[in-house]
Amino acid sequence: MKEFEAEHKVRYLGYFDGYVQYIPLSVTIAVMTEIVEMLQNPSQNSDKIKNAIYELWLTTKHEKLSEDDRTNLLAIYFTKLKMYPPQSVAFVLRDFSDTSHFFPSWAEIKVVLDKHSGWRNQLIRCLRAVATQNKPK
Image: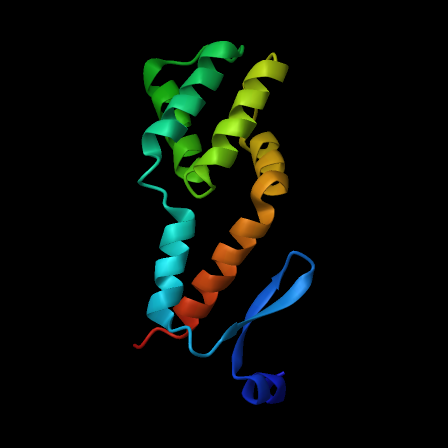
């Protein structure tokens, strides 16, 4: 692999979407970090994600929880959901709201979100791993 990388002036990125992916050496760690931030963009769409979770909560049955427990549960879901594209989150949660009688577990949501936006998250993880490996210490 090292020989292939040197010959083609690329760096191994990872395996996603069914293929081994490489990135040109001309793409710097700083650019990769910017790309990850741009793809991920968790803070920019926080309200959209919070609204989608809350709508799901209001439209499904769930265990009776104290206000603190509900707040903590929704905060944990929000933290996990903001790592996904907001459009995917809104679509998936709206679908759960329309089709589920009960508030779904995180595992149920994750399975559907990964199918809906898996390649994008794989790309983000690969870029993050490469950027982290190559950060100056």
